[in-house]
Image (cartoon, rainbow, N blue to C red; front, side, top):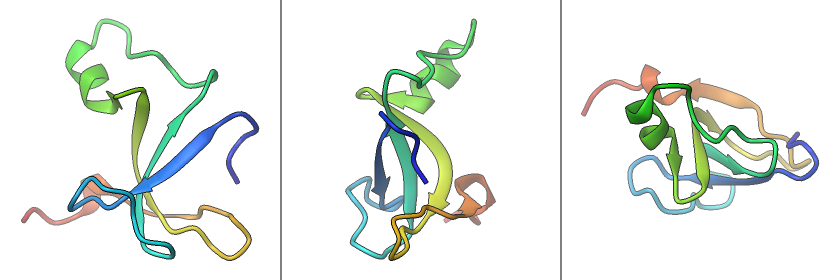
Length: 80
């Protein structure tokens, strides 16, 4: 379940748009408790933090109770 004060979205990894309700998507988050970047790692920071959102690389699907169980990682997907 998302932490209090954390805003979450699920993005379709193929399009970068919001995932359809019930569909699997990449979990992205923002809030006062989210890192502002990786120490001395500008490339990694630029990849993970985009437009104020932290891209976790975790794929999830919201269930009926609003829980977000992690289903897999983007890194585990086969290349296209």
